Structures are given as C-alpha cells and as structure tokens.
Image (cartoon, rainbow, N blue to C red; front, side, top):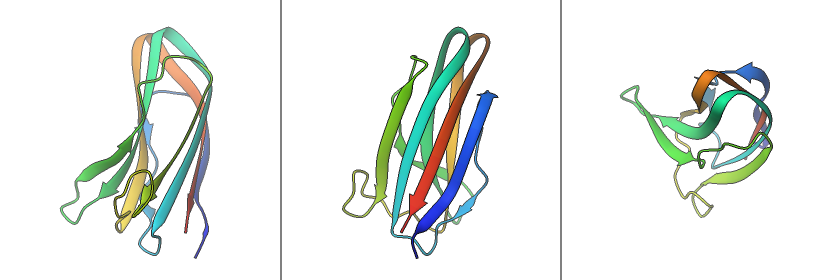
Length: 115
C-alpha cells in the first residue's frame, strides 16, 4: 500500500497536531512541510512526527529545527534504513509547537506520504 496518509493546509494557527493516523500497514513515512507566513513578535515553529505506543504516550521519532523565518521547506523520512531509522508503529501524528509573543501564528502545508 502506498499513498498519502495526511494532507493539510493550516492558515494562521498556533500549536496543535493532526489526528491519530493509522500507519500500521506502512514501513516508511515521508514528510514534506512548507511554511509560508507568520505573525506575532519573534514567532517560531517546530514540527514533530510522533509514534503512539501501546501505553497511549506519544514518542517523537523526528523533530525539525526551530524555525524563525516565514518561508521554509522541510523534507524527511521515517522508517528502517531511512533518515530516521525508526519503525512507524501502529499510529502516528504530526505535531507542531508555536512560540513567540504577540499572538504568534503560522501558515503551513504538510504532506505525509507512506508506503
């Protein structure tokens, strides 16, 4: 099975996460994220790909650098033999953390592909 697991375009959002995504039939996850705008004073954003374990806790398998420029492109892969050699597990999610002052928000698009 190969195809898109999750596609989202988020406009002017604070911290959040995707819903739990079923990745149990996948051995590889590819993440492509583009940020295009920001608001606030000294805004920052950081992205995480997290695996949900049997204990219900989310464990980060990948995290981006803390981004401060409005326009960024990120691309990485998670899976055995890939950039981040971890098993995707049964469920995963994309999480983002926004920092800064003055009501910081970000606009971004995320594409998650699996096979």
